[in-house]
Length: 160
Image 1 (tube, rainbow, N blue to C red):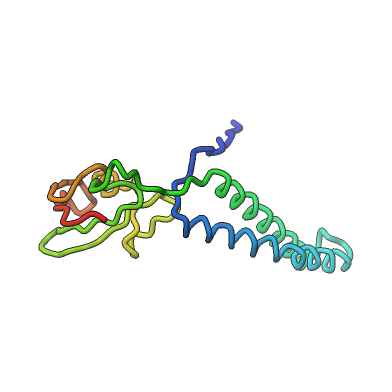
Image 2 (cartoon, helix red, strand yellow):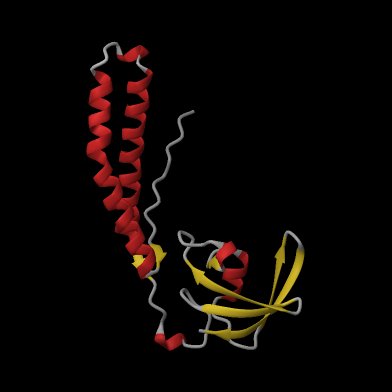
């Protein structure tokens, strides 16, 4: 059975910095294209392409670069820069940095879109269990979520 892959056209919530990084990536990828094209042409001149490993590798690299360019262009087109709503000052929202107390320790997380999430650096997605639970809560609130390690309870100490 042939399965069609549905293209995601939903907006991507991203910071100004994240959008800048995407634009830089696109510039780098486009800048590398002439080199990839030249390498593909150079290796194609070796003759029989069906047995030419260098040509297949060069062609694969060129195709990968084209796919990355299209993907990055699509992400830039769908990007919506995170601008915290001034009416929700004091509430956890996209872009907020939230200080939490859990198990006697303090941790800070910034709530971002899934494209910029990096939990090891304290950047969580608004779609993650913790990020989703924090949304629209205020300082002093306590939230409880189920994790792979069991039920976790957090108290919101600060929101900026």
